[in-house]
Picture (cartoon, each protein chain N blue to C red):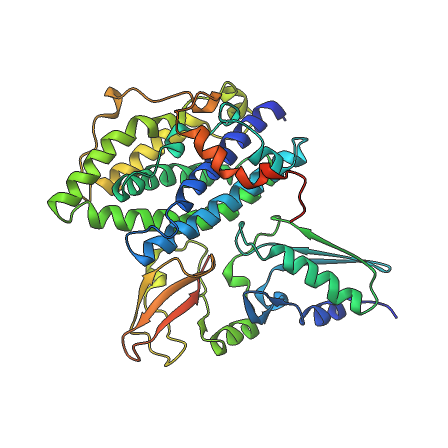
Amino acid sequence: MQITEEQILEWLDAVKDPEIPVLSLVDLGVITDIDIDDHRVRVTMTPTFVGCPAIDYMKQDITDVLNSYGIDHVDVEVSFEKSWNSNMITDKGRKALKDFGLAPPPKHNLIVDIDILENIECPNCGSTNTVLNTPFGPTACRSIHHCNDCKETFEQFKPV
Amino acid sequence: MNETALKELLYKMADDQLIIGHRNSEWTGMGPLLEEDIAFSSMAQDKVGQSHALYQMLHSLGESEPDTVAFTRNAEQFHNCTLTELPNGEYDFSLIRHFLFDTAEAIRFELLTESSYAPLAQLAKKIQGEIRYHTMHANAWIKQLGSATEESVNRLQTSLEKALPYALGIFEPSPYEQELIAEGIFAGEEVLKEKWISRITEILSQTSLQLPDLSTLKPEFGGRTGQHTEHLQPLVEEMSEVFRIDPGAEW
């Protein structure tokens, strides 16, 4: 069977972000290149945050999943050549985040200002009558907000 | 490419990130508010991660493994500026140091996005986006506490005056300044310093804090060449304590 890039991406849909188990690495946008050379597959990925502690788990998960489909030679390379920004999260990924209770990052022009962290849509009730509590949350990629309508505190996958 | 000059630049940046990251991590469990505890812990994670990426770049240029570089050197082999190694002190001092240092590093990485050394330009572009949250945090608190009560203004003013000579030490010229500039690797410490002065002035002018005449201050140089304060060696010992028990351990 000839392996295609589409096929690899379909298989990699099973590899989730260890900190957000509903979001696949493909939908997160961190898989930046796939190079197939006969039965050897090289996957290039880029971290969401430089200090992301989950990167080694992700590399191992990618290798394990592709091994399970009979690809014995898997190289996972971490590169900053195509660096990640939160606009790279797919629409499917944004929906998965919202269903998980985590507000998806607003699309931005790559110049993140404090303004775009305000009035984030509450993933619980949909209100935008919300305030930023702190730009730092339980993981490097999340901020903490409060909804003035449903009174819930929620997290956002922050725009970078 | 002048590799010696490039490595000297990478070492001082990596060491800055590691040491300030370690100091930030000392606020974990000690912050004056839960949010501040989390903020300094998150920034620590970012900065230590950034130091790792820079040590990794040095490794690709023939230097030792990141863990070996981070955990087996003594204080005099570190190239961080002395501002980063000073003890956290009280929250006002940590906040001022955070403001002064992070403003400089944000500009440094902005300048490096134009570096002729492509791997560094790519990494700088990535780090720039992360540091923006750090400066956003610093600016928000400086503006708020810098014009709040008499006590908060006085405390910040005292810490500002104490930290400034060390902050000027960030810009200690490299022996390879001209090479770095000529080869387009980095715009140089002098350019960085001018931009830094204008940015801190802009923020401080929105507060009741007074920026002293910087030309009257004597910069605390030495960190870039391994001449540190007495505070670095104990930090290094604590940071590398576990590693040194069994350097060959598999984690």
